[in-house]
Length: 428
Image (cartoon, rainbow, N blue to C red; front, top):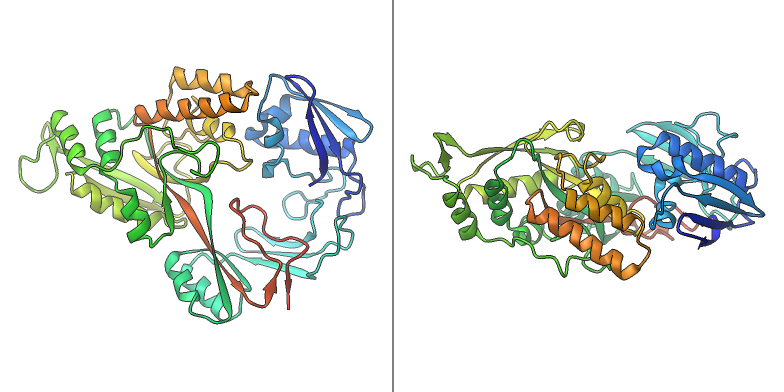
């Protein structure tokens, strides 16, 4: 939105021409120097923005010239990640509660995890802002959120449960929008704790994703075979996956020496019953998915104990055996960043300590490969190796349910749920 053109000058050099009309909410013009200061700050503050930290910057007219340390084929895509949102570094006094940005609204008050109030940006550069104020309120309980929407206490209710959306749909004052997101539910195995591949394979074969999505969750989750939506260039159409097969799961466990000798329905090996702790946190459909997985895996002789957390703080230190995690896999439209973070050795979202020299090699190739078809092929190869190793299973993609008051116009849902309020949203 702030740039009119992005050009690749060489394998490591990019030229980005700014929109001459853009200004910050304090009235200061968005200049190349301001943009560079913001990108440099992002590089310093965010470990995922390493490319910005290591880059060299220069100015050419109303353009910035960025020279990356190494070829980075996904660079233009990376600039659409929320971490690269442009703020006036010099003009901002409180980065946590009142950053000076370029959007249609400005923050007037912010209480983390509770409430944010935004006022109309009187100096917005891209047309008239139709709403005077926007108030974001965090309502964690699905039923409370549905009631708030039905009672008119909130005008837009985001990320509702299928049940609460079904309840809200009965109101003649609301419209329900359903959007398939690239927000995947990923089953992680801790590779240093769940070292028996046979058990990991049996779990994958024993999970019926279609039943979870269609029956248990009433369409709230679209089954997944890979990290990316099927309707994207990087979809899973060519991936060879372990599809649901209860008999196959039992066969694998038996071949690995697991037998139900005491006839209690749970297999044992060396006198120990096969018990897996599945860690989850309270997010979207996580608890419902885990409960159904628990029932399904019991049928193949695996006892699943569900370990529920308020937040996913246990993931990074690896305090789990198996765990469900929810994340947007294509926040910028390019697959590299997610694959790198999820499957690259030692990376930020590689919570299960998975390490594959083959995957790392493919990732290195992908980072500096600018050929679209070859990038698609590499994305498939990376996923295939990790899936063959039974290091991950992709359960499904979240279907975001949003209740919108019929008094609101101009609001559109999007697959990536970062951007919600635009200048066109207004309440009659």
